[in-house]
Image 1 (cartoon, helix red, strand yellow):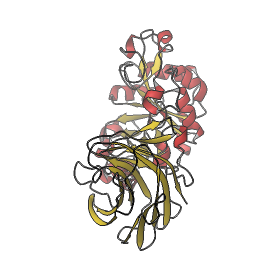
Image 2 (tube, rainbow, N blue to C red; image 1 turned 180 degrees about the vertical axis):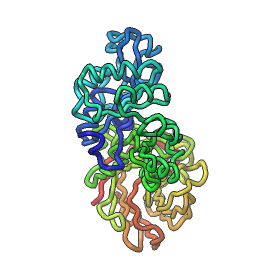
Image 3 (cartoon, rainbow, N blue to C red; image 1 turned 45 degrees about the vertical axis):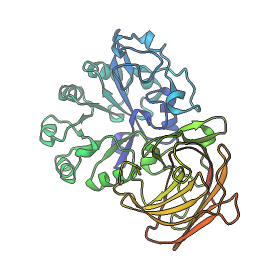
Image 4 (cartoon, rainbow, N blue to C red; image 1 turned 180 degrees about the horizontal axis):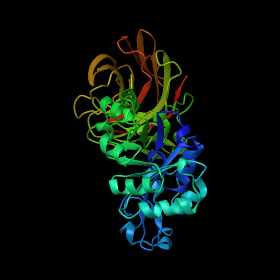
Length: 429
């Protein structure tokens, strides 16, 4: 496939899909390709011996167990670095992964997958083009990138397509024969896209990880989107049978509203540690088969609490889209739906959320207090007119409210209020 063959708009796996896989690793790229993603991105830096390493940062500190500047490494020492994958992405990923050389990427993926490679260091573009030509990579299967117009000129002078990152200067791009501009998502407007298209220039924007943002950008007319969570943004993340927390790896659309939580390998759960505030995490991979009428079941446990039992506990937010819910920092604009809470003292509560602000609708104190460390079952049933929140371990512990303000509610967020909470066995039935 060539870039010209791709339908527009398309999604680029930013750093290989850094929210799900160890960024810029061969293992991560293989997962992205296996997921059917057509374009993977690389950040390419010049090494001390003239080799080309692939890493986003100018130092190796964040991604590896070592420290120091990328530019100080040779091709040999580069392949001795240890990427700390399990620390950043959970126990489902092993340590001992190595950062790739650009030549390795070209050997395995060149002419097989569409590549979108950025010249991350100021002297990288020329050697990148040399490597592409030496490996016989088709220019139609590569888009190069740079924030520097001089790099874009160099790429074009040698016949390679290029994205001028950070720019909305359509007139200059056209004058320089640069076929793509790559503004930050917040700088994209319908007017910019229209001007670019009138000049024969495409627009790729970065970095977009939520669908509500994607939808606005597609309405503006962008041609491509860089995403750290490309499967979710592309719309292929829905899972309707189980939550797969047992895999202990991040799933598509599992994004922090206020925090991302962590995995607990001792019981194959996911959750959050106790804090003095509330936290929420989007579960984008989890989608009801009929978002207007469904039942969601899950098991949860409340461990240490940082407040009295009346205010601490676990929460499930069902929302109309994937705007982030950010309690308690104030209203979360754009969030509409229903907040369901199970408190540590056993109380059940349902509140309606309108533009980020919660209004209590009903509560029940029929259930016993939770035992720290012990799982209880929770069931949430949504119909066209009602919502029911019930504990499945206690007969009669339920609250029902009659409210149909927000339908459908296809998006699930899990969280806590001033407590350590774990979740598992999250399914729609």
